Image 1 (spheres, one colour):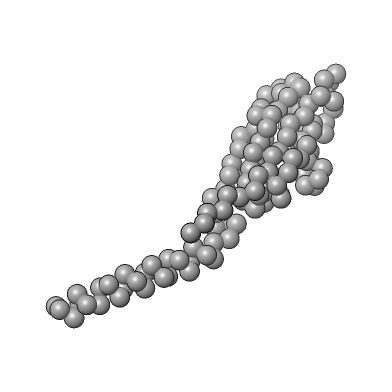
Image 2 (cartoon, one colour):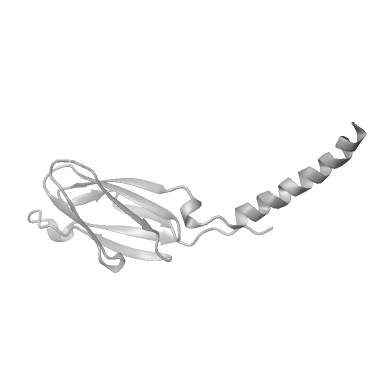
Length: 130
């Protein structure tokens, strides 16, 4: 019994070291997906500003409230058609480097089409110091 008591602290140290090594190997694929629901309607996207953290996996679920719309982020090579049926369209990507990225409707949807814009804001990840 006394031998077990002496080895328990050794196991605790090994577990701490193993946990630290595993946490350093975490990749974007291991991180939770940042999901945002977006509704397109005449002549706007809700929300109009989408904030993500650079490098994180992102899933946008797009739906139309009325009519057919498009969702285009040219600098990220994203261009999706959102059907008027309200069926969801999913777009998945890794958040780009910190910056502002314009989103526009890419399907003509009426007189206000040219004003149907939104913005993807990618912020730098917060780093923690030890």
